[in-house]
Amino acid sequence: MNDQQQELFEQKFAERIARGFPYCGKNSIAVYRKYVIAFIENFSGGRVSDSAFDIILKELLASGDLKPIVFDDKSSEIEKKIADFES
Image 1 (cartoon, helix red, strand yellow):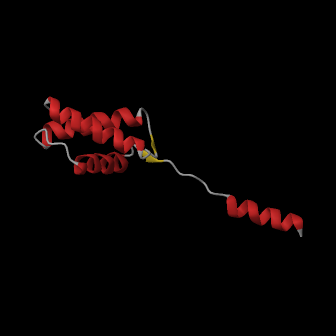
Image 2: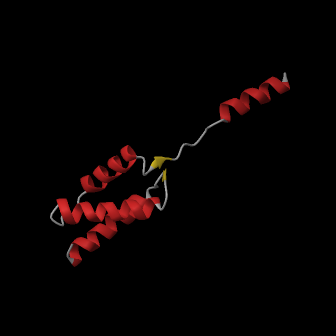
Image 3: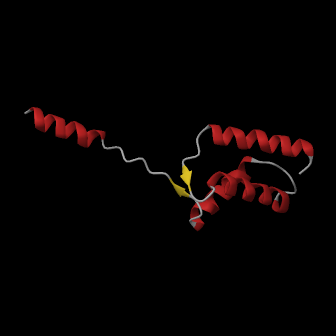
């Protein structure tokens, strides 16, 4: 990537991470970054695009290198126990 492409990459990467990166795995953000850069350099001719980020995320999830963080919402279960206790 040239300097302009690198700057655009940094901007898009920062925006994606700022929106939240609800995935875990060993060095998850660093791995994601490394593979997006490799994809852009080797398969996109240096062109930075949203699809490059999406393709790599999809592939890392499919391979198991990244796993979604699951938030277990037990609020309804807690409300039911409180209601049972109060009655």
